[in-house]
Image (cartoon, rainbow, N blue to C red):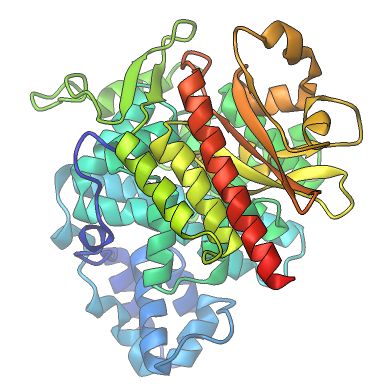
Length: 501
């Protein structure tokens, strides 16, 4: 739950994304060129999410049926539409200066600048990796944060509250989104991707289970980098992401860092018309300077009620060690019971994937566990790989949750037979040494619960959940709720397995 009613998709899409006046003028100039190449139209479209969305919409309406093949570039899309339709595109959307004012306009412009920075980086890496359709990667990164753009247009107070919680109050993004919006940005992004029929790569980049796919990984890393550098390039989180990018590009960290910095400058030159500070403008700033920008955006306001609202379904306070905002999700018995009943009624009826999704939603929304996932056992039984996750959308590192089983450790023992465990203060001394160092680095907390899943006597996977922060107590009641959901999921999976047999 959030501090107010969860926002709906209808609210988010009540008004369309606007286009920039620069796009309108650029199209007007091209009209005067009798032989303007389609590529020029495509270049303009790929710098304006509102125009890109309108192009995809018109393409869908023109075909009157779902696209059978993905659009590899906006140049291709323009050719399919034809000159008359293409030239009308900017006139069919409101312009940003007419549609948005004040905080909403500033927020939208800043979000677009960040989206294009991510898109340009992903496009650049696609070329390095010799991708067959780099413009498709660029478009997917550009549209990845469509939900945030739509919120600046239709619910600017909500998205501003989210920025305040994450940037000023230093609250973890997943929990802040839960409080401000009622769910994650990626959840709303997935809904919008379906409603707007966005390219398949956008859909996949919004689902953590695809995070190991090479093209998806490029998009997700670019989006993550663009978010992190908004307030400075020299913090530990950015360095960690740059290390992952270097690994993705199979290059050294120094070489990658320099290349990324140069690409940020090129992206700023490509889209200087956004009227928002480009990430490249922060490259000369020294560590610590970002606080001035934060203070400037979040000047105390008379209506700033963030400190006075106690979010429903969450307890917020300052971490003892870091002083940052910590959110401990509270269990919601009504939500838990409802999901439990749905799973019980769905045994033998719900598909396995639907049963697993309900289980992890029950852990997060009902039991109050901040992060939950189901990891599938590989065919060779050498590792566990995350298949379904919740509460982890803003962490591409955690989304690659993988546990190797080639050495004796706690999780290998868990997979030997159906069993569960809760690591807590009372047994940490006994069990913590059995947790692999790679897993400790991955989860960054010292309390969690896990249960192995066996179907027809064979191991198939593992449920895992935690409270994200060491400051949040993982109590026995929460653990028992976790186990209830796991056991129902196993019953549902076993019933489907029997039907198929």
